[in-house]
Image (cartoon, rainbow, N blue to C red):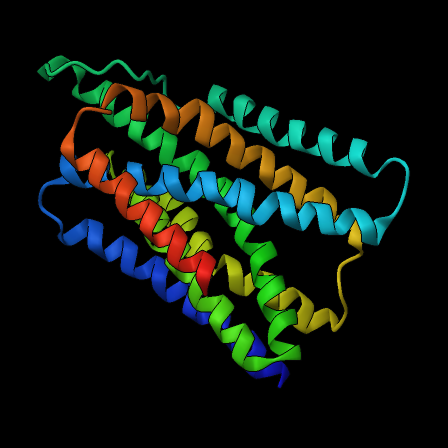
Length: 255
């Protein structure tokens, strides 16, 4: 049963791989970026209120300490601050892109920026989700499978978004390949940690990690994706992405 629960995370990896492949074969990258931006915004927004906040609230009861809420707030702020600090180490970027040849490099830098910080936060997030899938699979393999598929559907548009961002620069750097590889296997890494240790994370540690990731997701949603939404809100492809994202969120919520 332990091995079967571990292998459930492979389904999550498959959806990331599909997302990476889609962005390679889709010719019109501009339209794909707008669609996936809408999709990603809807999913990120839903993750905050449907997944993270309820999970953290459940951990409040499990930890049951006076400092629990303060701990969650502090690590959420650390998550936001960590991505803000990461801004210092990525190329300069902005949201006001013009339709000029001179602005292409700036636009690509911005896409790379979003791809990189999204990948970093998703790697941490999916390590935690891999742990959850593994624990669920140990209890009930069928429910674990449904959970893995649900997470995979979340990750499909996110994989497209990250791959487009990281590949917006025409280079084959080793570090970019490492980030993509870590993203693909991140859920497996989380499950494998428990598989090797053969025990659960302390609830307090899980609370801190979830809060940290929540802060990262909030930063990406509000400070990166939302300005893109405002800039391109009148474009048809963005509206399609938002609509598809809403439909996908509703489907996953009902599963």
